[in-house]
Image 1: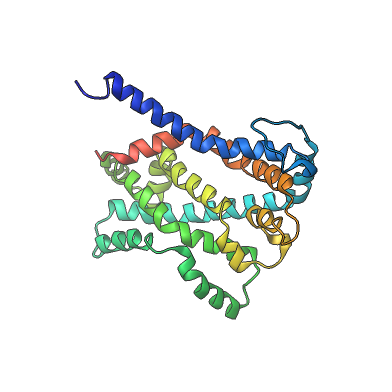
Image 2 (image 1 turned 45 degrees about the vertical axis):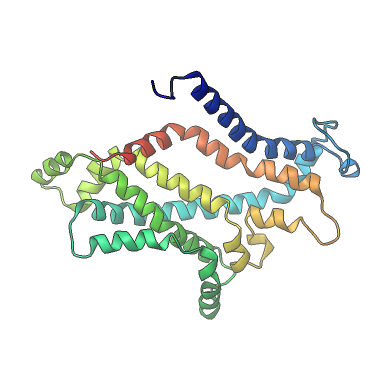
Length: 274
């Protein structure tokens, strides 16, 4: 009998599941306590909320509303641009044999081993010479470049699972590459494309180091930089930091909630070829 069905196996899985859940939930729970606590009582030890200062959320939202919009705008633009580039590139790598295809796929995977912060000084110098620092467009371009290789790899794995009979039938009907991609492949590839798109959005929305290098105008700051700016050298308003952090996680949570079905379908479909 496999350990999956034994009592010790079930106990181990349950304990590990509880540990992982606590690991994810406790920081959020502590942020809730901090966000509901007045600044004057911040050093008071609390295992559950003793105060209910909901005005902290209103104050925090007033400080970060514009920056949440910036984060959403950067992430959405990077998602659209990355998807427009990655889908045809991934489909070509998955379906069309050409010289160097294996090398291209290997380079895409290899590029993921390079930490983004390693190339940021070079990017800073390049954009500075081009006069493109402190630009929203520059942030979107860098977000796209950082996420593109992995998203192409994700989409390539998904496209390789699609039956070739659909493409052969479309070719017999006279479809060219563009028509095949837009009329046949895209309508049935929603889950796979959604996985890559959501990955780019969440990754871009949570990005901190890239805008820290490229932006100096606080009006263009994403949410991450604005929350960081609340950690001043003299006074740290922890109640505002906690409330702002909780408000900031709402967009990714909503997106995951609405697109959870597509994420599961895309991951499971791209995991097994055939």
